[in-house]
Image (cartoon, rainbow, N blue to C red; front, side, top):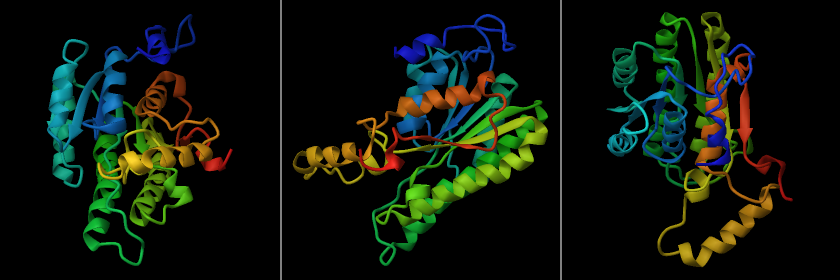
Length: 280
């Protein structure tokens, strides 16, 4: 258990009494897309251990394995879901309501990097897949979740973008564009959802171990040869001197889901160890 996870056992009444508001989610429900891997998978563990009831929505059956492993710690269920299909998203949202009667938090985490390719050579299939999952899928989740949380009196949502939305990646232009769209989508949805007591925010991670741009390209053939120099070059770009972990992002999502963040709305929070600032 990490130092942060050891603190989420603190309880409070949510109104400033001793110990509160707190990060515990006892009695509340979290819905997490992309929960079978990377940041989403870390979030499933973090929210489950914080006392949330968690529904894992992912097109990968590994999400079911994760849910089964956490059964002894919390109520975790899996619904196979392709966020590119609005009907599947609606079914997965309804599943949480049918199971637990409420939807308190949505972590809109499903996403793909897509194949590497310069803008002159990018494949049309990559364009379709990346935009369909990263942007259209995020929009479908927002649409269905906002309606469900409105019926329940409110809630919170966090979308996942990337610092690539701002820096741009010449090798992944479609990914960069899709994540810029997620930032804009967050702002647009927040302007509407606030009237329903639904808070909507966005997390933009930098390089995160085992995911995205940091992970891409380390094939089995060149990993040994290039891994050390690749890591050294990356470390020089991050003032804190390390890449982030999926848990770094998941812990921030836990905070944004909690009453501690009750007046944070329509904003983007960057988690990158200062990577956007440039070289140390």
